Image (tube, rainbow, N blue to C red):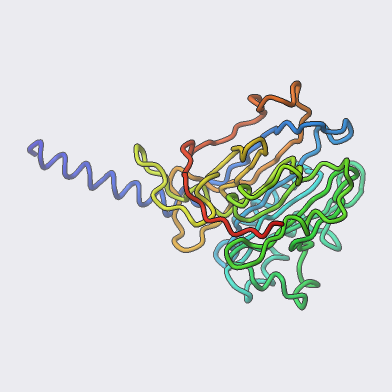
Length: 309
């Protein structure tokens, strides 16, 4: 075999192997990511508070097993709170699958019991661009979580969880989601698209934004990066980043929206631990566990369409 023939065969074999891996292996290679995010002026009783993140499930009959595995993995970590930042199911016919897939996390009324204290731990979700149905109150009783659409509440003493509408197909309003928030409460913003962080104002005093939407690019090519990123998902692509001084955590999520393929961007469930920084003027450098920053480069353009006053 000549060198040219060998090279061609090697390239073809490599492409086939990468395709098989991207279609069959990595989409099922669920990872648990753990990260501590320092929050300025964090009350002592919230130091160590944990938030579980289940993003972009895109639940359908084929993905129930993976989503249930993700829910079980998260439940074993015993988070204080669980959030679902949008893109829950493929279509309305898949709504009944939510109860099955999230059963490891659910008890009654959208909460599951803390195995240590027996107290309920709540789950909250916001609409994604695949979730216009989520704002239809007719489905509320069938959902194992509470939907926050330009709404907020005290999810724990001293912690205000604000959830906003989808930025592509909805009408997100941060001001409305913060209405009623105590002045001294730590404010966590749940927004499907991470680039909505660019319209956060200083007076919003958001301590942390949690998002999904990007799937980490879903496919990341060596030396090239992420060739395709969605609108409102180009500035904060994956993992921990900052919009000014506001930390933004973007989960790679669990599912896939169109093509069921992932390459160097494996699905994730996340445990975020709120931590008191040693110096609130500095960005955090420490973390626990392992955080995959598979896309360290950031884009420069992002569509801004969040209503703010």
